[in-house]
Length: 152
Image (cartoon, rainbow, N blue to C red):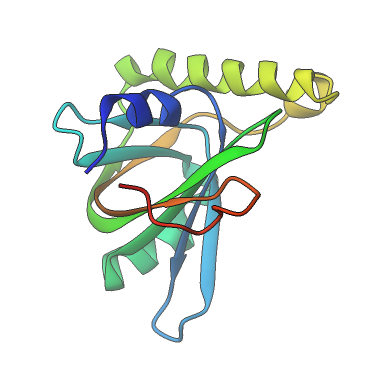
């Protein structure tokens, strides 16, 4: 479903938000610190700080539907990835460098649009829950006439 170019974009250090919904169709969501696209280009692992993952995990274990929005400051290029939850686990210590590396690239992008690093120093980035899902739909989320269109 994904190609390597899109996978590289997703792993580039972006603003990322994961969304779910409960049985009453009420939304839940959480900030994602980093992602890793599996080598099969069919699965994505989203690293969500443990302190904020509870409601999303509960929803995913209940109905399995997930949406993740990716936006790149400063040009606002973005996409939405929808999928089906497969599993969750505590992020491993050997994944911490990947998570913190993407987080630092995101902070660099925020600096490009005028947000100094100090406000993001307090954002929780570790420990994380690794939420894995199988991709089943892709959409352009870049503002403009193509926003919302399915991606090939």
